[in-house]
Image 1 (cartoon, rainbow, N blue to C red):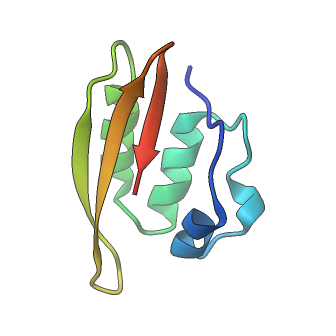
Image 2: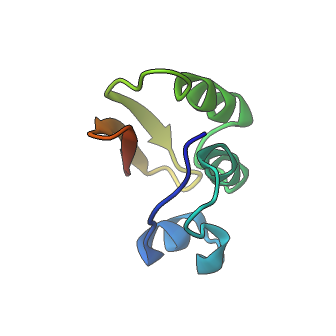
Length: 88
C-alpha cells in the first residue's frame, strides 16, 4: 500500500494534532483515518478516499468543510513512480 513520505507542521496545526501523529512511513489509509478523526472529513469520506487509492491513481479534488466554517480544497495528484501528492 501507499505510505506517507512527508507532512508539515501546518497540517498538524490544521488538525489540532500532535506533529508526530503523521510520521513518515505511516500508511496513507491510517493518515486519512486520522484526518477524519480530527474532523476534516467524515469517516465515510475517509474510507471512500482510501478505496480510491487502490489501483491507478487519478488526479481529483475534494472539497472539505472545517468545523469552524472554513472550506479547503484537497487535491490528490499522481506523481511518476507510483507516488501520490496530497495538497490541502
